[in-house]
Amino acid sequence: MKVAIIGATGFVGRRVVDEALARGLQVTAIARQPKDLPDNANLTVALGDIADTEWLAKQLAGQDAVISAYNPGWAEENLYEKTTTGAQKILNAVEKAGVKRLLVVGGAGSLEVAPGVELVDTPQFPENIRPGAQAVRDLRNKLRNGSPLDWTYLSPAALLEPGKRTGKFRLGTTQLLMNGQAPAGISVEDLSVAIIDEIEKPQFIKAQFTAAY
Image (cartoon, rainbow, N blue to C red):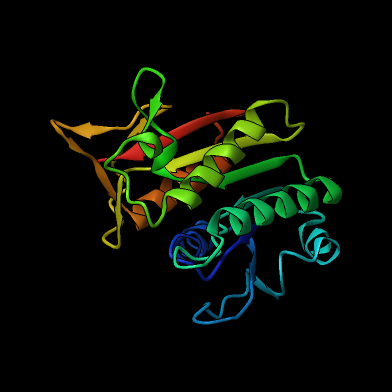
């Protein structure tokens, strides 16, 4: 299987590269800089700007699936606009390349904490990242409202941190997973397991899901 990973040197994307290579997938890592990408016969590195739709579509052509772990950076100014624009560029390139399968790594802010109330809309949600969370929630809504792609939108657990790969976690759909009264967490390594599991054996076509311990 051939899979392209957008944002391949980022917090999530870098671990997804490792997980995909460990399973023998043919990986195209799309990033602005090579950083610490591994030397692997199954890895092709494509360096460029996702804002260039023509260039990005060329990298995606012939892929079986695209994983977007794109994030312009939580500290960026105009975070909502940059996230929204980047996401639309990626959708355009995926469609132009003729790839049907897209998995988007979104945010926990898109998960329900009560009927009709999502985490991003609660007073406790951090103000500095709220614009980015709103942007990826809007992306999920755009996908829901009639995307021709076989899309999946993954919301990580509320607590996402570096850790160990255990391969053991719970899956959910649109509601925030909890451990008692506290939001549940997951390691970024195990989130990557959930991502590649979904690519290899899809369960959530045209749907949102989440993963947590």
